[in-house]
Amino acid sequence: MWQPNQQGDLRQFQLDPHVNLKSVADVFGETGLVLNKLACCRPVFEQIRKETNIMNFVQPIRDPKKLEAIKQHLKEKNERDYILFLVGINTGLRISDILPLKVGSVKGTHIVIQEKKTKKKKIIPIRKTLRKELDAYISGKLDSDYLFPSRNKKRRSEVVPISSSMAYKMLNGVARKFGLKEIGTHSMRKTFGYYFYNTTKDIALLMDLFNHTEQKVTLRYVGILQDTLDDVLKDFEL
Image 1 (cartoon, rainbow, N blue to C red):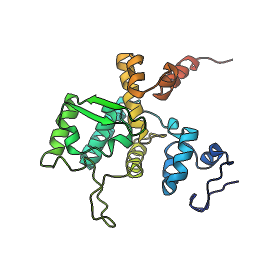
Image 2: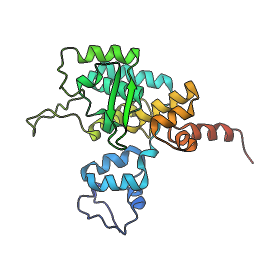
Image 3: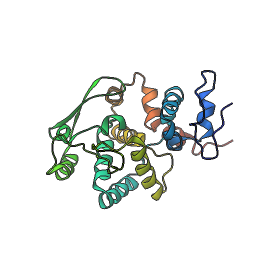
Image 4: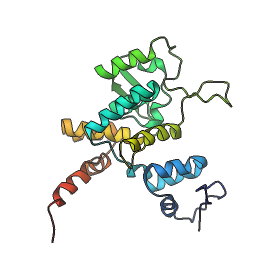
């Protein structure tokens, strides 16, 4: 039976094919806490994430007032993090596809990428507000520069993008300031889906954007199914 040490660190263990990975994940709790605790042990985390679908625990940011407050807070505090958040909630891209973006990738009318997870080509339009903010942010930067460079150069001579764990730490920390729980980097993608569906009701297009094959999966993924259940059961008592 696997048990973490006092620091919640799995580095001392070897991956046993007979171990119930869901149980291992449960030791660390739900949502982004799992990502945060296991960032030190990437191979283990990646297998647990794939087999237990941990990312599904994080929530979208449903409250539009809090969404705007977070945007304003990030804009005042850190321009890089602000732009990262804007790109995330306005494109619906996974964090693994956002972090490697370079300045030249966002100069046109669309962001064109090959998704790391699916290997599929994605073409996402850059709308007016995002375009304006991006133009101000990338002014004076080279096309080859990373859009979200890491400032940690202690052990590196080359410039690299920030890590997903650092992006998580930033977003989760800000979310907590505004009283939000179950928020991680995947929340940006889910927030995009949540508002897209509530605005357009176009579930077919959203399924295509997220590469889903079932409506129920998409509705659950972006939090709509839970909202519907909450509304139906709100006044139901026996």
